[in-house]
Length: 69
Image (tube, rainbow, N blue to C red; front, side, top):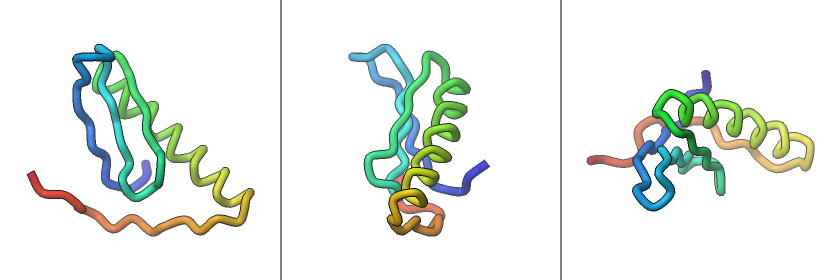
């Protein structure tokens, strides 16, 4: 499991849970359940990192908690 901060919220418009990964530009996932969205986010993070490696982009280190509620 990756250690990036995840922002998970319900989208009434989409009727899905949305997951944003603020430290990885454009990295988002969704799912019909909270668990599915979280699982999909782990897959998308892995794919984001593999794409960054293959294109020579830098991969930011996880910083921990970035936002405060």
